[in-house]
Length: 510
Image (cartoon, rainbow, N blue to C red; front, side, top):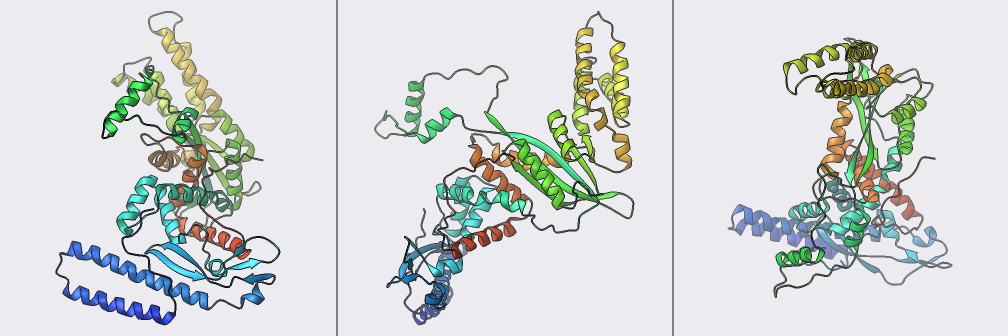
């Protein structure tokens, strides 16, 4: 851990001494401000350190006063005896390190004990204040762990280590799934139509060989007296030999797919149109597809769209057949919609077998079929069949044209019931997955699919779910909910430590 330059104040002895120190420090800061001749940049940096010291004294006064105001522990903790001396502790807070003392009670008939003051204040055994833990985890949903510590040090003058921040993320992330299952509050009344969009994205994960190298002991052969990184890297490359050259088009990143869901409602306006999105929530997981579908069904029920509800439910997905079948079983009355952009992309792909790329003829060919697509899937299928029958069995280029139309028909024909776009446009319903596509790029892509990243699935799960909570605007409510859970455990005299190095277990659906 990178500590502040200022020394840690000793444990205070009395409120009077602390108040006297506070008054003296305030007078010293005021006198220094009047005589300081530094430039503003230098003045502001020095002032920050003095204000930080002032904040530590205020916190020490608060802790001392709370220790003195503890209720009669003898009646509150029967079967326990008080340790004769106060036990000191160093607590790292926003303003730096603070030293304080508190009682320690020992259980008569079992091992271990507890600190009543820490239980009342909700302080875990991490040695850091909840605000520091919250801010570190929240920054980690946007930045890497190294950049998180850099930002904290730039603003506070100190920071926890990157390892500590990662362990906090894992510890806090364990509560994310339970929190989302507890029906967090919705800011607005629900609309009349519930829209569910589902998609997925793979993130790069570390192979077993990479994990062995990362976790094993690293030995570097010194090739020059200074041991610089340049010569060390050269000797490493010479020792391992040349890497196996990848084949053309091989961009494998050992990706593991995460399922992402966007759920929101649309409210009917006075103009007869559906407006929204209302109460949009995004949630994702690397767990099995069944587990995510179970969450979708439970969340829809919590939002008032149960199996017997009269409200309209629309589900917009890509062309994955297995996903559509499972959603149909969970939502038998829902309007299942195929993303129209996926169909348009396949129209362009098939059209390149008939016309040159970028030509006017290709655009005209696609526009004619697109016009039928926006009316209904049945009309599009009928037109494609007619085109397929009109292609000769022999001739230059006819083989590729037949294959292109066969692939297009093989995709469109089984899904034609999911392509009633003309009808749905009249009802002002959704026909594209723009919301979930944007969520996939922002929630997963920008944080977890960057150059050089290699994730462990259990650790990636924690970041993904915490980032979803932050994107949903629920972070403050979520961390208060977590604090309540930890406080309940502390009140039962349990040992509570947020920090952990164990990755999350990916739960399967029951």
